Length: 226
Image (tube, rainbow, N blue to C red):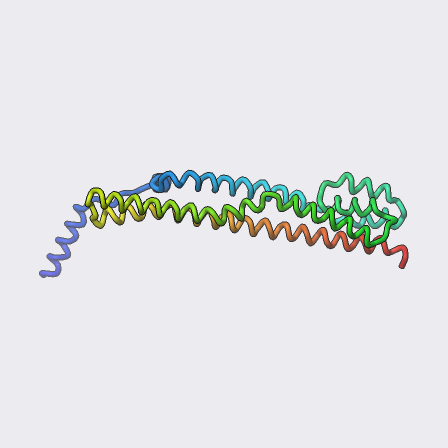
Protein backbone atom coordinates (compact mmCIF):
# COMPACT_ATOMS: atom_id res chain seq x y z
CA UNK A 1 0.00 0.00 0.00
CA UNK A 2 2.84 2.36 0.89
CA UNK A 3 4.58 1.69 -2.43
CA UNK A 4 1.36 2.43 -4.30
CA UNK A 5 1.01 5.75 -2.46
CA UNK A 6 4.61 6.63 -3.36
CA UNK A 7 4.04 5.83 -7.04
CA UNK A 8 0.84 7.87 -7.06
CA UNK A 9 2.61 10.81 -5.42
CA UNK A 10 5.48 10.68 -7.93
CA UNK A 11 3.03 10.59 -10.81
CA UNK A 12 1.23 13.67 -9.46
CA UNK A 13 4.52 15.52 -9.00
CA UNK A 14 5.64 14.58 -12.53
CA UNK A 15 2.33 15.83 -13.90
CA UNK A 16 2.86 19.22 -12.30
CA UNK A 17 6.38 19.65 -13.69
CA UNK A 18 6.67 21.85 -16.80
CA UNK A 19 7.19 20.01 -20.07
CA UNK A 20 10.73 20.21 -21.48
CA UNK A 21 11.20 23.12 -23.84
CA UNK A 22 11.08 22.15 -27.50
CA UNK A 23 13.69 23.93 -29.60
CA UNK A 24 13.88 24.04 -33.37
CA UNK A 25 17.05 23.13 -35.26
CA UNK A 26 17.42 26.71 -36.51
CA UNK A 27 17.21 28.17 -32.98
CA UNK A 28 19.70 25.56 -31.84
CA UNK A 29 22.15 26.60 -34.56
CA UNK A 30 21.70 30.26 -33.59
CA UNK A 31 23.03 29.44 -30.15
CA UNK A 32 26.38 28.53 -31.72
CA UNK A 33 27.40 32.17 -31.83
CA UNK A 34 29.27 34.26 -34.37
CA UNK A 35 31.59 31.40 -35.40
CA UNK A 36 28.62 29.77 -37.14
CA UNK A 37 28.76 32.36 -39.95
CA UNK A 38 32.17 31.23 -41.28
CA UNK A 39 30.88 27.66 -41.05
CA UNK A 40 27.82 28.59 -43.12
CA UNK A 41 30.11 30.16 -45.72
CA UNK A 42 32.22 26.99 -45.82
CA UNK A 43 29.10 24.86 -46.26
CA UNK A 44 27.84 27.00 -49.16
CA UNK A 45 31.30 26.94 -50.77
CA UNK A 46 31.53 23.15 -50.43
CA UNK A 47 28.11 22.61 -52.00
CA UNK A 48 28.82 25.06 -54.83
CA UNK A 49 32.20 23.53 -55.70
CA UNK A 50 30.81 19.99 -55.52
CA UNK A 51 27.85 20.72 -57.82
CA UNK A 52 29.96 22.74 -60.29
CA UNK A 53 32.67 20.07 -60.50
CA UNK A 54 30.14 17.24 -60.68
CA UNK A 55 28.45 18.81 -63.72
CA UNK A 56 31.81 19.48 -65.41
CA UNK A 57 33.17 15.98 -64.75
CA UNK A 58 30.00 14.25 -65.92
CA UNK A 59 30.06 16.32 -69.10
CA UNK A 60 33.71 15.35 -69.64
CA UNK A 61 33.01 11.66 -69.10
CA UNK A 62 30.30 11.44 -71.79
CA UNK A 63 31.95 9.51 -74.61
CA UNK A 64 30.14 8.03 -77.58
CA UNK A 65 30.67 4.27 -77.77
CA UNK A 66 31.16 4.54 -81.55
CA UNK A 67 33.71 7.35 -81.35
CA UNK A 68 36.84 5.21 -81.52
CA UNK A 69 35.30 2.86 -84.08
CA UNK A 70 34.67 5.78 -86.43
CA UNK A 71 38.20 7.07 -85.84
CA UNK A 72 39.57 3.62 -86.68
CA UNK A 73 37.57 3.37 -89.90
CA UNK A 74 38.66 6.83 -91.07
CA UNK A 75 42.35 6.32 -90.30
CA UNK A 76 42.54 2.80 -91.75
CA UNK A 77 40.96 4.05 -94.98
CA UNK A 78 43.32 7.03 -95.04
CA UNK A 79 40.59 9.62 -94.46
CA UNK A 80 42.51 11.63 -91.84
CA UNK A 81 40.51 14.78 -92.62
CA UNK A 82 37.26 13.10 -91.55
CA UNK A 83 38.91 11.80 -88.37
CA UNK A 84 40.17 15.31 -87.57
CA UNK A 85 36.73 16.80 -88.25
CA UNK A 86 35.13 14.32 -85.82
CA UNK A 87 37.61 15.06 -83.04
CA UNK A 88 37.27 18.82 -83.51
CA UNK A 89 33.48 18.63 -83.28
CA UNK A 90 33.43 16.40 -80.19
CA UNK A 91 33.72 18.26 -76.91
CA UNK A 92 35.29 15.93 -74.33
CA UNK A 93 38.83 15.17 -73.05
CA UNK A 94 39.14 11.93 -75.04
CA UNK A 95 38.33 13.70 -78.32
CA UNK A 96 40.81 16.50 -77.62
CA UNK A 97 43.53 13.99 -76.79
CA UNK A 98 42.83 11.93 -79.94
CA UNK A 99 42.74 15.15 -81.97
CA UNK A 100 46.31 15.86 -80.93
CA UNK A 101 47.27 12.34 -82.01
CA UNK A 102 45.57 12.77 -85.39
CA UNK A 103 47.49 16.03 -85.92
CA UNK A 104 50.74 14.17 -85.30
CA UNK A 105 50.07 11.29 -87.72
CA UNK A 106 53.19 10.62 -89.75
CA UNK A 107 55.57 11.34 -86.89
CA UNK A 108 57.25 8.66 -84.72
CA UNK A 109 54.93 6.76 -82.37
CA UNK A 110 56.87 7.98 -79.34
CA UNK A 111 56.32 11.61 -80.35
CA UNK A 112 52.59 10.98 -80.88
CA UNK A 113 52.26 9.29 -77.49
CA UNK A 114 54.11 12.14 -75.78
CA UNK A 115 51.87 14.77 -77.38
CA UNK A 116 48.72 12.89 -76.37
CA UNK A 117 50.06 12.39 -72.86
CA UNK A 118 50.63 16.14 -72.48
CA UNK A 119 47.05 16.85 -73.57
CA UNK A 120 45.82 14.19 -71.15
CA UNK A 121 47.66 15.85 -68.27
CA UNK A 122 46.14 19.21 -69.17
CA UNK A 123 42.65 17.70 -69.29
CA UNK A 124 43.21 16.07 -65.90
CA UNK A 125 44.27 19.43 -64.48
CA UNK A 126 41.10 21.04 -65.84
CA UNK A 127 38.90 18.33 -64.31
CA UNK A 128 40.65 18.64 -60.95
CA UNK A 129 40.27 22.43 -60.94
CA UNK A 130 38.93 23.74 -57.59
CA UNK A 131 38.84 20.21 -56.19
CA UNK A 132 41.46 21.24 -53.64
CA UNK A 133 38.88 23.65 -52.17
CA UNK A 134 36.84 20.70 -50.95
CA UNK A 135 39.95 19.18 -49.40
CA UNK A 136 40.70 22.49 -47.68
CA UNK A 137 37.15 22.79 -46.33
CA UNK A 138 37.29 19.21 -45.06
CA UNK A 139 40.35 20.17 -43.04
CA UNK A 140 39.48 23.62 -41.70
CA UNK A 141 35.73 23.26 -41.00
CA UNK A 142 36.27 21.01 -37.93
CA UNK A 143 38.97 23.41 -36.74
CA UNK A 144 36.56 26.34 -36.95
CA UNK A 145 34.05 24.25 -35.02
CA UNK A 146 36.54 23.46 -32.26
CA UNK A 147 37.60 27.11 -32.16
CA UNK A 148 33.97 28.13 -31.62
CA UNK A 149 33.64 25.63 -28.79
CA UNK A 150 36.83 26.85 -27.10
CA UNK A 151 35.77 30.49 -27.39
CA UNK A 152 32.35 29.60 -26.01
CA UNK A 153 33.82 27.68 -23.08
CA UNK A 154 36.12 30.61 -22.25
CA UNK A 155 33.11 32.94 -22.29
CA UNK A 156 31.12 30.50 -20.14
CA UNK A 157 33.76 30.14 -17.45
CA UNK A 158 34.52 33.85 -17.52
CA UNK A 159 30.85 34.51 -16.86
CA UNK A 160 30.83 32.01 -14.02
CA UNK A 161 33.92 33.61 -12.49
CA UNK A 162 32.41 37.10 -12.83
CA UNK A 163 28.94 36.37 -11.46
CA UNK A 164 29.66 33.46 -9.16
CA UNK A 165 26.75 31.48 -10.69
CA UNK A 166 27.92 27.93 -11.14
CA UNK A 167 24.76 25.91 -10.93
CA UNK A 168 24.52 22.65 -12.84
CA UNK A 169 21.88 24.09 -15.17
CA UNK A 170 24.09 27.05 -16.04
CA UNK A 171 27.14 24.93 -16.77
CA UNK A 172 25.27 22.21 -18.69
CA UNK A 173 23.29 24.73 -20.71
CA UNK A 174 26.40 26.67 -21.62
CA UNK A 175 28.41 23.59 -22.60
CA UNK A 176 25.78 22.05 -24.88
CA UNK A 177 25.27 25.30 -26.78
CA UNK A 178 29.02 25.73 -27.28
CA UNK A 179 29.35 22.16 -28.60
CA UNK A 180 27.04 23.09 -31.49
CA UNK A 181 29.92 24.66 -33.43
CA UNK A 182 32.05 21.52 -33.07
CA UNK A 183 29.22 19.30 -34.32
CA UNK A 184 28.49 21.65 -37.23
CA UNK A 185 32.16 21.87 -38.19
CA UNK A 186 32.53 18.09 -38.17
CA UNK A 187 29.42 17.63 -40.31
CA UNK A 188 30.58 20.19 -42.87
CA UNK A 189 34.04 18.64 -42.92
CA UNK A 190 32.53 15.21 -43.48
CA UNK A 191 30.36 16.49 -46.34
CA UNK A 192 33.38 18.10 -48.02
CA UNK A 193 35.51 14.97 -47.50
CA UNK A 194 32.90 12.64 -48.99
CA UNK A 195 32.31 15.04 -51.89
CA UNK A 196 36.04 15.28 -52.62
CA UNK A 197 36.50 11.52 -52.66
CA UNK A 198 33.44 10.96 -54.83
CA UNK A 199 34.61 13.49 -57.42
CA UNK A 200 38.13 12.04 -57.36
CA UNK A 201 36.66 8.62 -58.13
CA UNK A 202 34.73 10.03 -61.09
CA UNK A 203 37.88 11.73 -62.40
CA UNK A 204 39.80 8.45 -62.13
CA UNK A 205 37.11 6.73 -64.20
CA UNK A 206 37.40 9.39 -66.90
CA UNK A 207 41.20 9.09 -66.79
CA UNK A 208 40.90 5.34 -67.39
CA UNK A 209 38.72 6.02 -70.45
CA UNK A 210 41.36 8.42 -71.74
CA UNK A 211 44.15 5.85 -71.26
CA UNK A 212 42.12 3.16 -73.03
CA UNK A 213 41.37 5.50 -75.95
CA UNK A 214 45.03 6.49 -76.19
CA UNK A 215 46.17 2.86 -76.27
CA UNK A 216 43.53 2.01 -78.88
CA UNK A 217 44.60 4.96 -81.04
CA UNK A 218 48.23 3.83 -81.01
CA UNK A 219 47.09 0.34 -82.01
CA UNK A 220 45.13 1.86 -84.90
CA UNK A 221 48.23 3.68 -86.14
CA UNK A 222 50.20 0.44 -86.08
CA UNK A 223 47.58 -1.67 -87.83
CA UNK A 224 48.55 -0.86 -91.43
CA UNK A 225 52.17 -1.95 -90.75
CA UNK A 226 51.27 -5.30 -89.26
